[in-house]
Length: 212
Image (cartoon, rainbow, N blue to C red):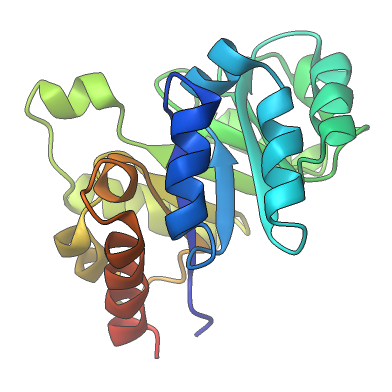
């Protein structure tokens, strides 16, 4: 079973703060994500900066695009992104237009998705989804459990590559043992730590325990 990638979500309010963290932890992770908050604050210049910092790494643009799919995808692509998110409530037309420009389109799952819609995403060639425990849901007391695992497993059975995110910590990783997750996405568990490089390495070491 292939080892899942580790993605670092940079959701800082300033590019300077995000760059400082990325300088430390970026070399250790597999994917550097320009988070929604950072992109809203600093624009797609943040993508350009991280592309220059990490020319050989995968760069993700977490736009959570809901409309104007081809335009947003073209802007992300031109800035240097390999991946871009669209929100699950976006129309099939929006997803299709984004996919026509940038192959690495990921549907981020919140509450607007269904298995019927997932089949339509497959039909237009989308191969990647992100299973997301939202920050607000986690603050309201939700935890990772069998419900989440069963959904993740079904998406994999349908042929999707799946990333998981939302309040991940080292203890969350072992819950997915034996499940061919494509990517684990960690935000504050890396970026909010006193030593982001050590936090990233701890994640990589924990992933390798279960996917040697």
